[in-house]
Image (cartoon, rainbow, N blue to C red):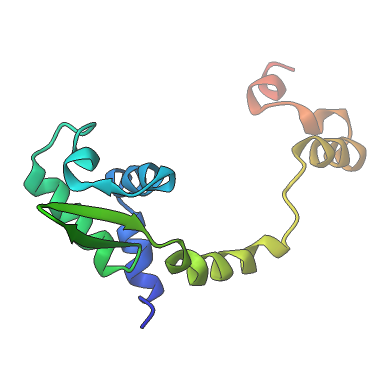
Length: 119
């Protein structure tokens, strides 16, 4: 069952968890290797991994004595589809908007409030 969008976005809200996902883009990693670059305890990293696993963003499996983490990219599909709905709007071209204001409001349109106060 796919995790809800709320669970996925909640998991993605933390920068440590986003960095863990970025690291797992390269390859599966042992939990100890995931923890290495962070200045926090192994228990704290394990909590982050539990949240990522609960959101379906990673899976964990034991191989011998070592627990491995694997990225599950399909878990981001629903979030990606949802966000693409907002991509239908054109990005604002600020230079074109400023030129429009100058045409419509005159030369003073591009001036800052401080510039206008000095005039």
